[in-house]
Length: 131
Length: 131
Image (cartoon, rainbow over all chains, first blue to last red; front, side, top):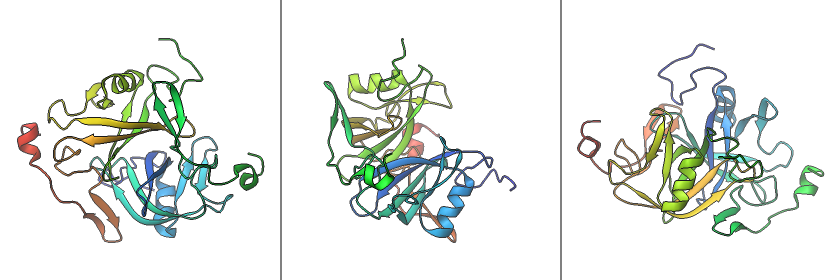
């Protein structure tokens, strides 16, 4: 696919990864951050459900494919520089985080170390089969 | 500085940049995303005001140094993988975005192109001297 330097978001090449912040449309809670390449971004727009690029698996990652915890896109925004995406979603299921919390940001940094500030929402072992 | 592989957030080296999402503690609005290296992160914790690493200037970026639009840290969280930071802040001044909007995410992606969904909050030219 040809690269359009004026395209926003600014996928300067097919390999470019841009951070995508996922926020609950209803609660305003920031659920997670993942990365999209152009293909993931276009599939997200086309299907209305979030698709990312997994840097560890080097492949598209359709959020919720294993867990059922799909994210339906309510609104998609880009930042001033066109290099960050914000997706407001309806999160299906108990949580966005594969550890079992509603959000991946379940730990606060305090002077005494990390403190868990969220309630466990589901049993990740059952959902992901021992992951 | 020695690298601690178990440290969270996971600055695997002094050059590692991690994305930091900045969210208004009061409104829940996502204001911006920028990057922190270890030095920026530690100064943020120490001073209680956000400090980033500017990838374009290759130097620390003390948010608000020019504009006065400082961000006071209310809570700092890390994600499950320890490689993304979420900072909940009190934003000083009319906006976080250097373009003049309250948030950098002022444009929605629609089938008809980009649509501005925020109100201009201040005159960026006056604040940044013609930037």
